[in-house]
Length: 250
Image 1 (cartoon, rainbow, N blue to C red):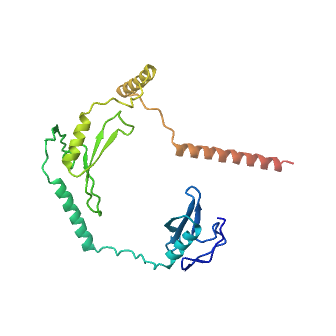
Image 2: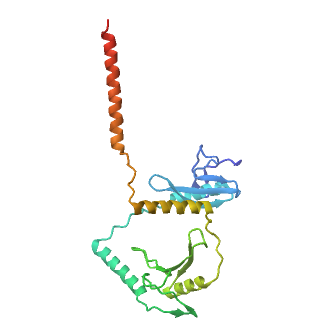
Image 3: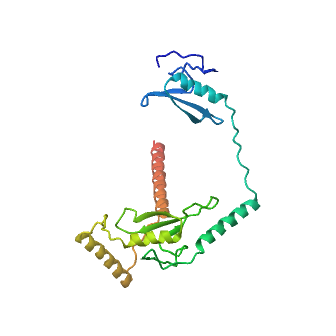
């Protein structure tokens, strides 16, 4: 920062600034890298910045800033919203892509392992999901596999990755399910006193239901509020009457 700021360099007029520590607008010193960073503000309110690079001297960074301002600004016009016909066509293409991915026949065995079939899954394989978001292009690996095992992780789920076909995801699920493992998170055992207390409470509730014992009366908050309000009003009325009687007595 010791070098004085110059008004022109590299064939362009530099933008001086008295508020900047470097003396140039859009140029800041980077202490950890030992250089100078140049960035130019973009957008209507100037809240977004475009990084121009890291330079050895502040004059080079100022030249890059000045040249970036001379570049023609590209107006970012928002794309027009699709019409109803276009939206319907995109939805139909999306649904057709889903049906094409799910129309392949199911396999009971692949790559030497027996697959886990499931009638509840739309893919036909347990733990395999189809990730095709509506309105977005079809990914190259649209299937994901997830194994649910309690006691292995805090969430109880193990993400196995994304795959190009449902069979590949089902094979990964079958291999991971067959792998022996030891539990990492064991549930905390209950003490004998806690177990006896819970069992006694359940037994007492069961006996009350069998004997038909009446439930304890429940106090309504509405009735309690109005009863308390009436008592307070009566007490105020009595105090006012007593005060008036004392004042009228000669």
